[in-house]
Image (tube, rainbow, N blue to C red; front, side, top):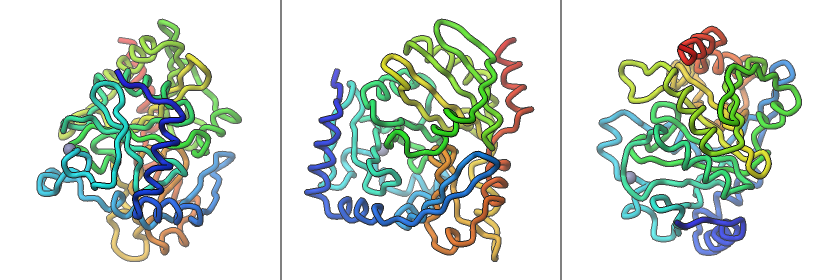
Amino acid sequence: MAHVTRYDIDSLFQRQLHDWELLRCNYAALENVKTREFAIGSTRFRVQFNPARIISSAAKVDTQSIKQRRCFLCGSNRPNEQEGLPWSDDYVILANPYPIFPRHLTIPTLEHIPQRISGRITDMMRLAADMEDFVVFYNGPCCGASAPDHAHFQAGNKGFMPYDQDMKLNGSITQVAACNGATLGMVTNLARTAFAIQASSIDGGTEMFECLYNAMPIPSDKSEPMLNILCQTTAKGQWRIDVFPRRKHRPACYYTAGTDNILISPASVDMGGVFITPREKDFKKITAANIKNILDEVCIDANDAALIIKRMKQ
Ligand SMILES: [Zn+2]
């Protein structure tokens, strides 16, 4: 079973930056990317103007459109320049050519199978342990994944998303369950409702996640509960899994015509406090109130979270 080290990932980037012009240009552009800082109370948000991300933010993810395109995560369709590092028995680690992070990776399965988290949280935790400088994240098939038909994780540099620091400084975790060295807490004071699992073993973290997952509602037209997940090690042998249950994929402002239109398609990184605007006009006009409205619309509230906890305990 293949593992990776910090050195393997550094070398992958060195080679890809050297050999692949599109990737080199997009990482160079990211160094000069424009950002704006906002706060909702004491919770911080950053907005990043990232034109290359239009490919993801405006992606058509309906069944028909997905069937008609060639899957960009399948080995046979990937660009010739894109190199992969084998990981575990059934994944490959790729440098993401459309980055948000200074180092941004995509980790698809070798097989073309649907994006689902069920049965994969163990992989996510193992990956986070191998990639100790990174936060591994998961976008549900209806919550920001631009390849809902091909299972994958992504990863970006630790410390890049303000949510981490906000959790450390101001996060108030109300513990709701504890089992097998893992705890589950609810976080409601950081401008969105989230769950935080802290675990000292992969088994404990997996068990706690599965418990939470099984208590989350599945909308009638969806295949799994709507969610985004961030997973990282906080020390050797310690993990934190942040789960952001969702009630909506894209906010109303994504579809509105006229001046109220803002093209934002929130996924894990936005939940982590970095909002991506691929269009400059949106980057210039967006306000803290817009961010607050988008979060209120796409995330669950404390009442929804209480219902999930109640179901979990039954
Ligand atoms: Zn595929």
